[in-house]
Image (cartoon, rainbow, N blue to C red; front, side, top):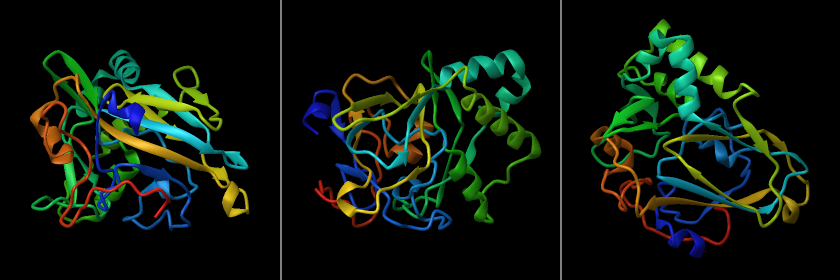
Length: 248
């Protein structure tokens, strides 16, 4: 938290107001549409978080698996432009993404932001395929066309291309800082230790960077604001900012 404070302000990572997050398998059902996948042992798939910078600190590793993975969303953009510019164009259209039950006051249970966004000379991405798919559970959410699904499938195929991504095995004490607007991160599934005191455990920060790039106004649906230094995170009715020292 102290290290992160040199980069920006910590943002709430869930409706409970956790500014210090715990990435740990809480035994929750990955098929529950209101469960965030980081609370399980399942693979997360490539995605961005709702902030400028996400930081992880490894406390304990799993028995096996749980590798961190990174891929450049800018590289995916360039590859799609080279291979299928027709599909790339579709990713500049708004797409419904599930808010997983953590809905800010006055908003819908999903937000509608394009995967790729040009704004003031910057190309920024926002993406979580699992939540795009689960937003289709809402009858009022815009339906995905066959062409949009094809575009999303190509995006995923490129993200999973070993020529484009990297995998990193965390060790206790390792810190990772990721710029969400140009990088996607992932985590492989893992098998944990049976002893509670040995189980995989990371601490996480979501940061609003002090010297961040400008973002288009549409990001306010998810970020609450696009004001540099004061944007991102999840605030719902009753949220109280706190930094729990144990996973809850």
